[in-house]
Length: 84
Image 1 (spheres, one colour):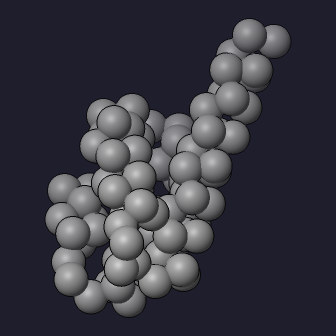
Image 2 (image 1 turned 60 degrees about the vertical axis):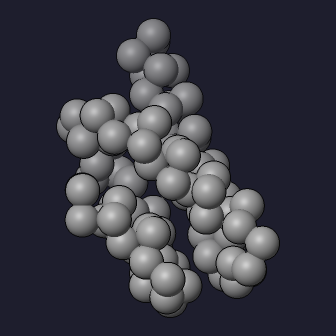
């Protein structure tokens, strides 16, 4: 995970987008362990930083927002299942 986080700061937007896609596509894999909870705040800050950058391509910004939405949905689902 630390290498993926570092990759979100690379100058090449294509690399950033590929990392965001990788994280989004593997959300269910990460969500059942402690990986996301350990890096949750760092991931959120990195995603928000990438989607608010002025010169960031729309593809990267949209991917960041989608990742944040997936993370929120996964967290809400886990809370619902845990409660019931």
